[in-house]
Length: 216
Image 1 (tube, rainbow, N blue to C red):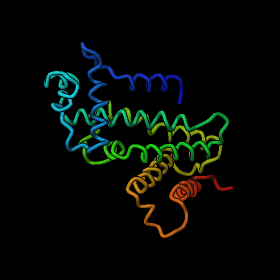
Image 2: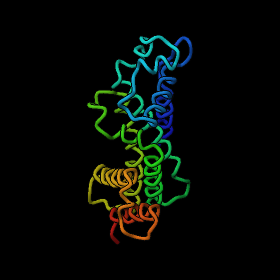
Image 3: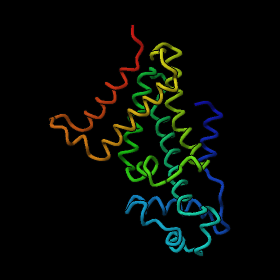
Image 4: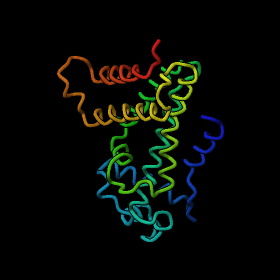
């Protein structure tokens, strides 16, 4: 990611809402995330979060139009966190194919570590996610990580160049998302094998990504 994109990611993560008694927006998001992890999205309530934050019941509406707005902001935070982790997983000097693998593995680990947040980000709870600019942009930044690796790999001849770069990146995304979903739902445990789940997950990812390599 370029310097300008890193600055944009930082700006996206900081948020813009403040409250005269402190950063109420961030406080509400922190409380909402805890409730999401503890009991899921159904029981989340702006009024309940206001009581817990010690503010009036109308104060949260200065930052979120409704519960869907709160959930969209929470999902956007998840995408920004995912972006940071997949960027950080790529070390200087790594070959491009290994960058893709380590970024994919970081993606899967994020889903495993935060299953409730991950399901909010990709599930049906937020009915029309593209109507929230903050969420849309955060999702684009997350996908850009994969797309940048693919573009580097195509340019240097590591990845097959017979398909559009966006299609290759979408294939990578579909792969890691599928593995992530199987993992957090415990489906790798359904496989009758003595191979540990971690080895299955890493092996599945590596074998899947091999299909993107240029033929020599």
